[in-house]
Length: 180
Image (cartoon, rainbow, N blue to C red; front, side, top):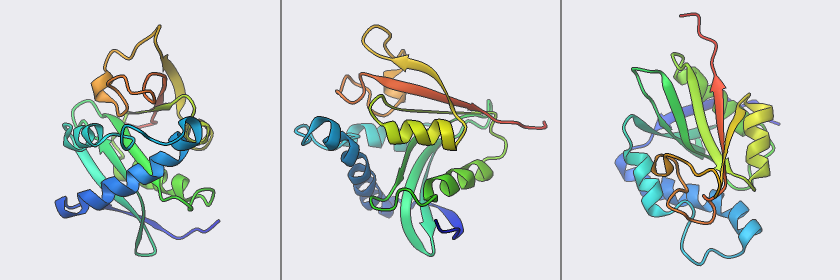
């Protein structure tokens, strides 16, 4: 495990096509392992990705280590409620298991110190993500969306719109300790 510092750099509009491709490539690994080839296009879909990027308060961040993009995140920041969302988060394929995700998440928390609550979601089959959010980052699973308990806000989270990956999702929440 390396301890190189992580820098978060806002993405420029010209960066978005490469950012989206890298994110979709990273997300595809687990989906292909679970469901086989992606017949209906990338996960998340271009539509879902564009919606996250265009959401109110959205910030698109490159995760940079030693001057190289090694991942990215899309966060939705609410400056009024300080209840923020991690909509999309990825580490480049082949770079897992080195503490990079943990250090990137710590950098995101440090960048938004006024956050009261973070929320994120991930598909039920993403065991690596579930482990990461619960055991590494300190999130708690607060809800499980499925056919019998549908997400009341499916368009506010990636993988909505009834795609097979989004039918069963865990919702995670992390309450931050703020002295304010």
